[in-house]
Image (cartoon, rainbow over all chains, first blue to last red; front, side, top):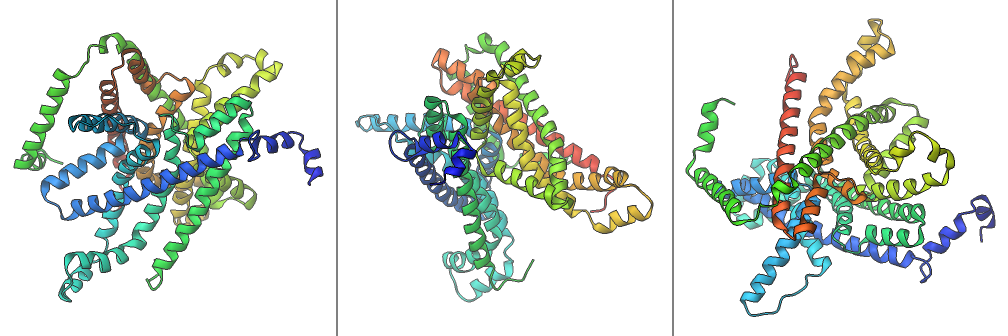
Length: 247
Length: 263
């Protein structure tokens, strides 16, 4: 095809062979790993948003005990390395689940890597999302809530139809940052032995000794993911900012 | 904050209960969990903490020294400097640190032994160890994130100040050293404090390339004794203490920098 390229760069042909999707090449493994990473990142981000919304509401409108407990949660998660939280939550979660199952007379189960990864990263993401959403909700002018109340909207309806649309443009830059952290944090699951992109890459690189080929290829995949999602978030932000005064 | 206000904030009924519950948990952990492994691993743990701290300090220092030119190039540099600086920051920020670390250790590290002149050089004893690669990866990562922070900080210094300095007859270097850099640094400090804590949280990754810092010590305890939770809990406490001290140090630094500033 492009013989001149091969002539220019002698190692390219082997690299292309190693990265091919058919079995002698490891491209298929890398793509499967990337798909697993993407699934976990999506799941963790969604779970983080749920926890973050609940946490932000708890911090803003909850009682004193709720607020203090939530502060403990966000402070601890933001001060302890993700890797250690993953290990603690992974072991403790599996333990607790199996003890509960045993108490109910069921047999212990092996938690699947995807579920554990999503749960653990989701709890980590939730702490950061709590702070992002709390700040965004707080900066919606009070008058808008009051106006919604004056129209006879209930608390849920006000939240859904007034607070969320008004705070989203403010929250989006922070959320987009969180999504990038989620995609990159999936790499940490490689250390607990879950076959996502980074671990697949290391296995491929280790067995072929072509470290640069595989690590650079994986880097390109991660970079493509982050750049593409940056575009998507930029597009969503532009959409939600329509009709708002320029800042 | 004065003592009276602290007292007012802590001695609220629900907080007293919460503190009591927390103390109860600590006492329970101290009595019910296994801590008999601590004396045996004490020396190793102290070495591990020390290694974590100097990796953190040195990588932040080197990374920051790289971040200043990276930020300057993006904020005010010509295109042929700004474009590579931006590309570097994008790549570092767009890929996981673990991948960068493994690329540098396994990839670059496996290249060196092929060249006889490297193996005969005086650097070779260092290049055979893991920590230079860990330090390099951590420094480059910090530089990538902070380059972006410094770009914003340099841009936020009002142009009129630089013009005023020029009209006072200051040279370019004097302007940078006395006007531009101090103000940019002052604006970047709160972010830098947060980023340093993030860097602390990134240090345990170097355990995967055989650098024995505090996280690696706790893994070894886990493997040797099959005690799972206790080392991890202690480790979490250690990181929280270091993070708290870092936050405090940056707060004091900020206060110093903000002296004589308006607002």
